[in-house]
Image 1 (cartoon, protein in one colour):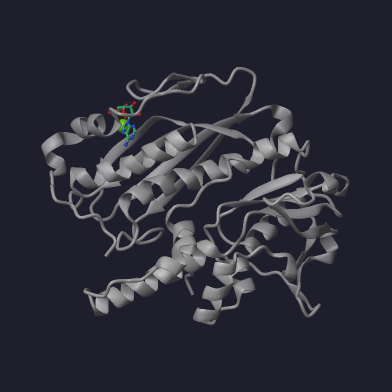
Image 2 (cartoon, helix red, strand yellow):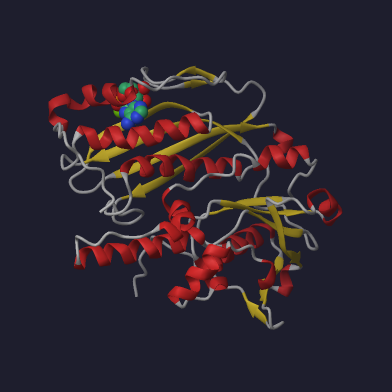
Length: 350
Ligand code: ADP
Ligand code: MG
């Protein structure tokens, strides 16, 4: 329904593998000082001088991570880059290069891949990263995209998942749950469209939520913001699977417990009203809905005054001793164990 109308359909076989690579990558220009050699040789060459190198990879598989019925290819390209840059920012680093590998079936015309690359190129431009390589191959069914993000940080600036200490404050950027509800709206519209292809969806009131799903923005602004505030997080992770599963990851890696306060979880008003409409609990959505790509981190209590009142940052709880466990303190002051019900792409085998 939201698919781009493809007027022209050039078969992939008309270009051949090398012609296709050339066609898709000819507009990509390297701009980063650290990129010595980008696309066009057997390997890219990158020079970070005395900084540490950060590398992260993710897969996006059609039918598992995205549905082309409502995901325009340009958005998909953009999102594929975002989800990877988010991991570099979660190390408190600067992202500077990506590689992009795609497996496509000949069900996709060249024009579809042009759309995908338009999104990749836009993301690269907006986030100042160079596309320095990749691989192109065929797939017998769906579309598979794998992006590798490369970045850097000073050794003393790198933040791991493992540094949280008891009494640290638990802080989150932005607001949570919106990407998940955006997906619920798109799924619902897909069903409506199936039943009645002439129905014109009126999605205006859901713009924010749908954008959070289709066009997530990684928090490039946070590492420099923290630096400007003179705060080095003790631990950090990006929120790709849902708040509770990320808190559990941080706690397990740091060998600590945590208390999360329900009333502190930042929610957008649009999320609250859509949760009412869908009869879903907004806290559950924030805890378990994925793909927000916000950052979750811990800071020493002594740094509280430095972040206090910053509209990008919300203190949602604190770290406890490991033996105290991980809990959600509800609005009614009940203490419930935190459980990971984050979205998981691996189907259970039971
Ligand atoms: P090789 O045979 O060494 O794997 P390729 O012919 O696959 O080389 O790729 C040629 C160049 O194009 C390399 O620099 C490679 O990194 C780049 N490249 C290939 N596919 C893509 C793609 N989908 N996106 C960006 N760069 C690509
Ligand atoms: Mg290759």
